[in-house]
Length: 200
Image (cartoon, rainbow, N blue to C red; front, side, top):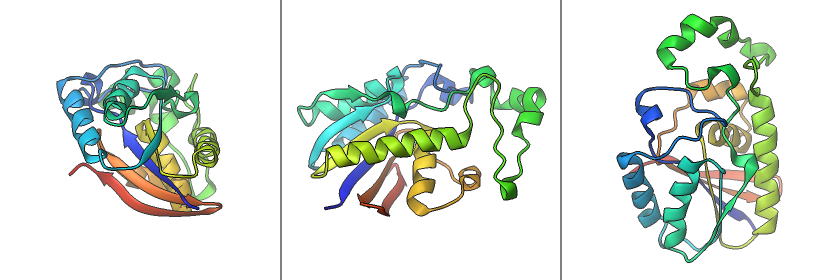
């Protein structure tokens, strides 16, 4: 039986508005729009047969997950493997500052699969490995109904690349909105993407 996995990106934070990098060490909270997005997601998922809800331990994710859980009488389970990429020295840096301060880090050779490691942080392949292992483990634990994973930008996109069999370099071509829903089905080694980046 295929596991139905619903990936939810947390609602908006002020750092999203300020275009600041918020990685695994930035415990930012939802702003007013983010709380509205969480409520909207919960309403959309109200009729889903959700059996378990796992969340990044970061507050922006946990608070989003709690709203979803309130519609299903479920407890949110914090899952460390769903944390955002550890951004190291890039934590809190704006995208405007990024090119000036860290241009050498951003240069990569996609053809050779060379991904830079941010000083003090993680590489994308490391994120993909820990997140895909978590997906498979949690899907095996909950083979029936739907499984909700509330998490982050790079986590979800790395999972989507795994689902579609795409190289990680495709992350740079994808966009994922705050408060979005993506859904895929996992049956053994076979994965099928049903929905991506839905905010409607």
